[in-house]
Structures are given as C-alpha cells and as structure tokens.
Image (cartoon, rainbow, N blue to C red; front, side, top):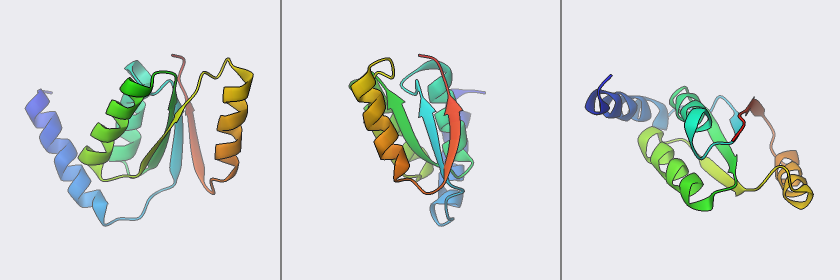
Length: 108
C-alpha cells in the first residue's frame, strides 16, 4: 500500500471515528518504533484510545502526535524503562486509574 493511499485511509478512518466513542483504552509497551508503533496505529484506527509506553521520549511523542492527528483518538504517553523498578511502579500507578484497558505488550 503506498504512503499516499495509507495516509488517505487513516484520514478517512479518523473522520469516521472522531465522533464515535472509544472501544476502550489500549496499553502498548515498546510503542516508540517497530511492531509496537504498528500495533498502536492499528488499534487507534479501530477506535481504541491509547496509552503508549517506551523509553525514548522524542520518538514516543512523535508516534503519539502522528496517531492522534491521523485518527482523532486520545493518546497518552508514559516515558519509562520497564526494567527499572521505579519506572515500572510509576506505570502501574497510572494504569490503576484507567477504567477499561486492552493489553498488548511489545518488546523494545
């Protein structure tokens, strides 16, 4: 699929989803690149709001901004290294406050 067709498809989906309610919130770790970023894009296109977790703030912010603009979904970011206990505790605390989560874990 060409980049232009893919962008047009995402634009169409975002317009269709902007006025729809969220299917829930998906949490994706390793979301700043690779398969994690692809899952984030696909889940947002299907109507899920997102919480993206990764170590690299700049890449994570760029992915979040692109997905939010393309799909109209709510995208939150958590910058964390899940191998670091204080970072993991922070992520756990944030997720405790979320009502409805859909889990997808990617290795960075």
